Image (cartoon, rainbow, N blue to C red; front, side, top):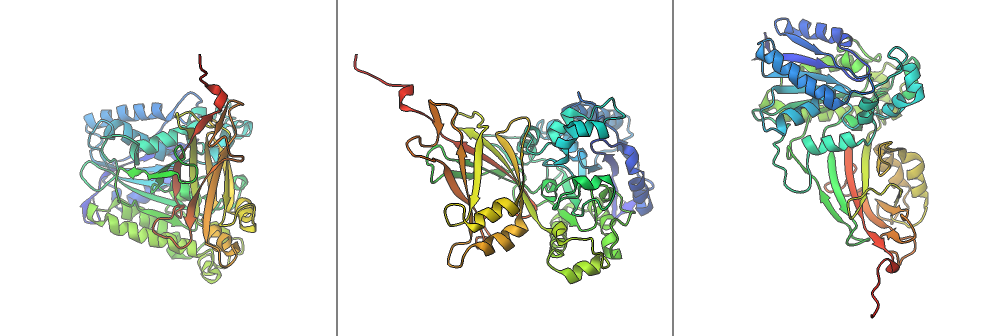
Length: 485
């Protein structure tokens, strides 16, 4: 079989949490109808709803099964992967553990990620709750996959560790090769996600603007950023160090579709939310484009998908185009297409110990709770989640469209259009505090975004940002004294 002028690879498909491979019969039919008849298509099944199974357990078994199929000459290397939702975390951990860390060539050429929960899902916390056990676990002895959901929870230690294995070079020397790239032995990833919530049924209760109903657009994008902000030497001038990315300046193709939710993003033959034909057919076109992409075309695909994502975002402000695309459907709200960013913050003291009780405050150029600061905390910062495995790590969900279009408009003329943040932490006890114990209300602060600084500013659209904050732990004078003997 030839696809795009090249013999197609075999394809393996991985499902997500609380799902099975049976959900992908339609996808298999689509691939076969588009030239994959002669290519074996593999459906991977793994346990995701039993409380004792971790993603690491699935990865170990996946590696064993892949090796068995290759040895039996049933699975041909290289092959391609299509993953959905939690399947993205499984595949990334498998590639990082079994190939990159062992400096082996990856057996995968292309990895098409459909709504991958790369940086968590707000739904994971609900899944671990009693409500989740009642609605999701009723046919599995009320198990919902606690270990799997721990990894999926927003700002989880699993995601932090995985990002530093396959995306970023942590502080110090790390010789593990880049997982993603266009060279031999590397994987070319592609990410496709929708930004339309569930349009009907009980799943509407989990809808959230800036998401597909289950996974946030910013949480799916692999083009993440990381930095360390170190206040240990100076409260007012922290040392900011950007994290190097293992794959350098390589941008990963990322497409945001306006009419797909978390389920229909796996169904290219399904029209999705009612829209004009070119939008309904976009998912299938992008999937086939990714599966036929050659190394030399990767950058061009990245640019094309970025332009497509910006067209989706433009629907928020262009009512005429929105009505045209969705055939005058009054239920399609402009907020569906706002661009968000997600920040995962981890706070430690200068000894590396977690700081569980801290407060982040955002404000503009003026001090105190001015109008723009109130606006940011009430309407721009839409959700904060303290991770249940350690409150020193939090996820912040920011409506970046409202940041640019509303927050900065609220700053009076003549003032700099900037967003600043400060951090304060509760003292561990009477003998130890944070920052400078000689100053009341001591805290550290920094500029995190500037409207007119497009090159160096942070809070990129549709992105997740990892921020490690180090603050000084300061003992009071009586902790140690010397007196003349």
